[in-house]
Length: 175
Image 1 (cartoon, rainbow, N blue to C red):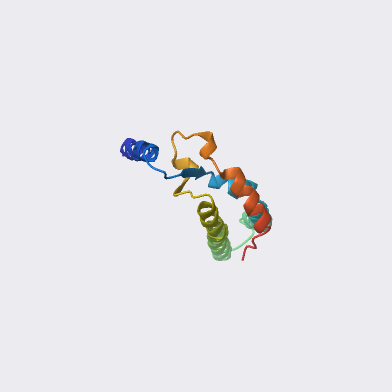
Image 2: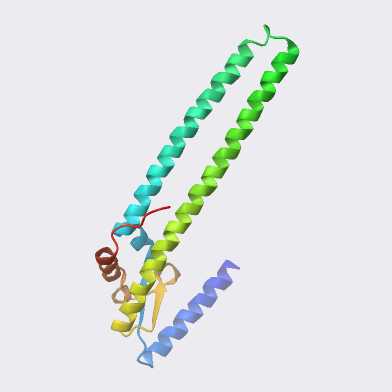
């Protein structure tokens, strides 16, 4: 299936190149990943996400340490406690561990949603810039670099768009 998709993309690109040679259409490509990594707004998003992840990681490491301490404490009391009391404490510990896992999964999902939302927000902000740039420079189509197999480097508009994005967008706030 992968080879079929690559073959179709190759045929499409060859057709476009052939048709562009016989027409006045202009094409360009852009490395969106580079824009996401190197623009001021992209760096801002990455820094905010790193801080959020760091805070969450610290929080859950401390909870893990507390759970391990509780487990050791219960194990050390095994011979001292009544069997029913021991089982009751084990059940409480399992409930705490399940609660921990659920909260952690919830926070991971929330983090991933924030990451996707921030990326989409940046892409939605970049889109009008691309439209304006393509109108100004009479470009018919702009492709993502990751979908291009071979392309002339003079068709790469990434650095020009990066400068425009940096001049217009400094920061995107994550919710």
